[in-house]
Amino acid sequence: MNSKELARKRRHKRARKKVFGTIERPRLSVYKSLSNIYAQIIDDTKGHTLVSASTLDDEFKDIKTNKGNIKMAMAVGRLIASRALSKGIKKIVFDRSGYKYHGSIKALADAAREGGLEF
Image 1: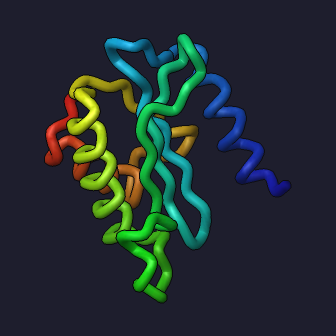
Image 2: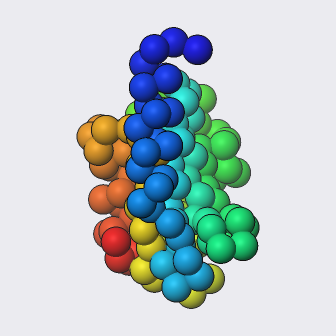
């Protein structure tokens, strides 16, 4: 593991001490790889994933290009917001997983806000 990834994991560990998802306000956790982006809404009291979305879902299977970019992050943000609202989840806590709030992470968060999530 390179030093950049180790630094991200350290930042994520530090942030997770403060960010905790409850049943009233579950946690929206984001992970990105070089080729995909993943988002899941988690209830930390039970340790269950309530809703998830990623660029590997069926909605995006016909796209053959890189799925880890800002355009795809916005699509995943809109998708997770619609799935959360259908399950009755409106208020969440955002967990950026140690990534800078910039680029695809910011695009996903903005698209989720536009989709109706409050954080």
